[in-house]
Length: 145
Image (cartoon, rainbow, N blue to C red; front, side, top):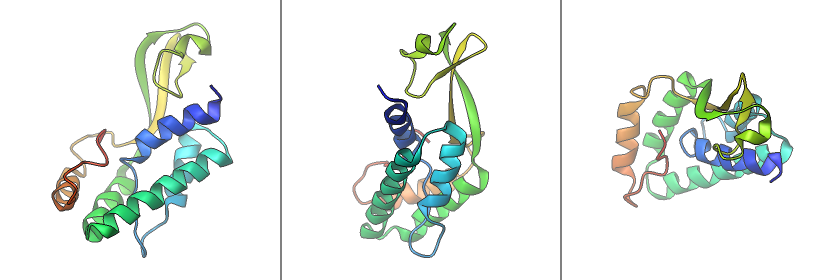
């Protein structure tokens, strides 16, 4: 699997929880650029990220959840940091991390994944709840946050 494709899978999962603007707010470009800086990747990865962002903001707008969407992702963007997470797999070379989540690399004999995330999962909890309550499809489009 090409590294760009691996990044896209990991970025899509992270991106689901990491978007924030519709119309007047920042665009996906600022998030996607930060995501690329954190996780690595290439222009194609950033394009996929921007497309996913546009899709999410269209869904929120269609559902009448623009304000809740904006509030949740403004909070997320203000607080998100590039976080390195140990996957629990031991490695000696990068290929040892192929059983780990997409985008994992070998660092100090442990497979790790980098992503933009909240360091404290209780941050933005009210904004997330407000957006989830507004979401008329009854689904949480940002399940990992």
